[in-house]
Image (cartoon, rainbow, N blue to C red):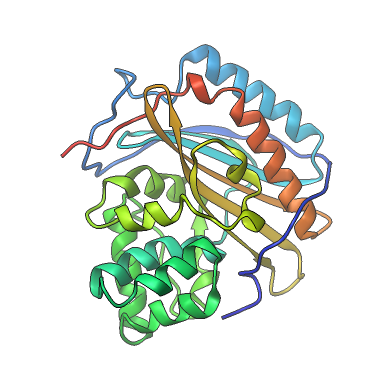
Length: 277
């Protein structure tokens, strides 16, 4: 496994451009629990969040992205100019789901280590438990497809460098709690090590997983997270990513902290969703 799956701390500021889009979730196996038209939030909240993100982004020196979707729903709100990049340790979530389905009793300890402390050796063992590289990649990719991500292609090795778009990731996150046998993995996402609980980890009662690593060519760090955030009406899936021009991991963490602080102001107004058979 590569360096890029490690943990750390905070610091930053800067400048960028804003891109906002609404996308549609397809192949959903459960219905949203709130918002008759399945929007992410009331129009006034979307406007306020979009405006707030634009102001925040004007002070950031790098690329940032935020995506939100109700669990079990179809709508996705995406903000920011960061769209895709290496999955890093966030890929350990579908990997753990695939491995626990394959050998539920035998892989529990490694799944716990891979998710809660982002242990790379444990993740490697989970990967190897799925067969050869092609079989493992197919197993993890099948979990993504089942979770509504129709485009991501899982790299055979190093699998952490699989490119995972922000909208595809939040799409998957919105389906994750509804997937068969995914409950144990979501439960592990409730218990992330405090040393890795920056960004989304600062939200109350959040289930999340982060990933971070340096670009092979430039050495500049990308840090990203996705998670499940409770609201007054259910749960929303959130994905965030930050890539500072400084290339510093600490600066990336600070950007994630700033985006999370903005998001927290509007969480109570977001339309959460629920899983239904």
